[in-house]
Length: 235
Image 1 (cartoon, helix red, strand yellow):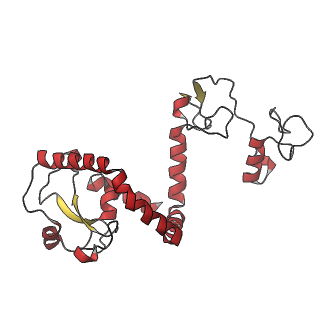
Image 2 (image 1 turned 90 degrees about the vertical axis):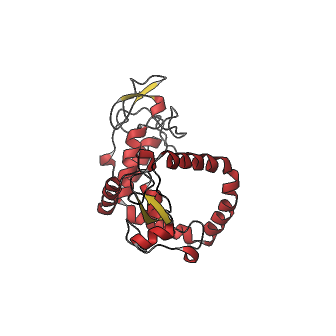
Image 3 (image 1 turned 90 degrees about the horizontal axis):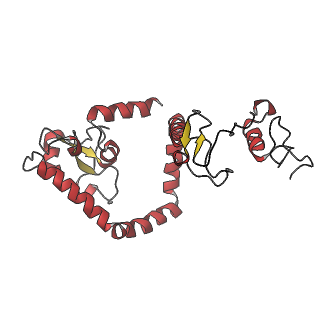
């Protein structure tokens, strides 16, 4: 509930008070920090224009298209630019990765989430059939234009390289054991050097990997993927 004062009690702020004689921005900071000592003065926006504004974090003057939209900010855009926001979100995820993954795992195990995914996946392919066809055509083109060895199959690679994933070294699921279209441990053919980066569809460039590692690796080289996994593990 707003106090009787006409402006925020924080020096230099002329916004209308919302609670504890503070404006909405300062009261939110007070709630987060728990102490009035750490409340900062509002960021100086006198240099902002209709098309550009200053990022409150990196202090760079950028086009408003470089900021995410926000209905809670007066000008309709967030105070931090997209680059700073992404860096902050990434740092927060890495610092709390285990908790985030555990919360996601618990969410996926709830009956409501399982039912939602069952209903969603049942219609997703039909709704995006053209996109699947386009990606499949691109992949076939990459394989056709690259060097191709004959006879490369999951079972053939299994005989050469065993039953474990090339990257996580955990057992992968073959044949009848690969239950579920979206089984993360389902066996898949992995191109060590991605086709999109000049890799070959050859015996030397193919291995067995679980579907989870295959999707996470994406178009990374083995060195880039292992470095990525080390960063995640060290976080």
